[in-house]
Image (cartoon, rainbow, N blue to C red):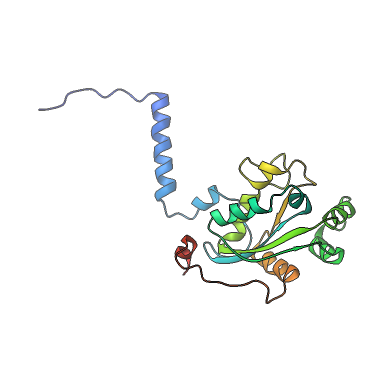
Length: 201
């Protein structure tokens, strides 16, 4: 039997729903290169979906707030592999090298004094696109602008006490790992069966 029912004209609400579905389908199914850029801020260095290593360091305020375990949990649940970790009270000369670009800033002396005032935890994480993804996970430097769900958005209360550091580029990560770890300290280990192995070329 022929169906002669008239379909209702799309209302603004229905139209936006249809457009939303179409956009979601485009995001999920499209192979266009712009899709990942909707999710994380672009970082410098390294092709997309390559296996990388990055330095992540919980600063003294993060240690004092007992957040080391939470940071590790978030990175492990994301599928990244911990290949290096140490607790240390950072020497001022290492901090001076690490923050060399900020040496002319008025807050630089207070920054070095604070970061050398107590122990921090330096880690090396490995995985596909770990540099860009870790930057998205930790959030904006200023806690007032850090999104909820990021480490800084959830735990930081001031720009000078922002919990955590992560390398901002593949090249920067290589330099920072060499600065904070001896060449034999990061340990490569097999993670067969783990979901991160799905991305291994």
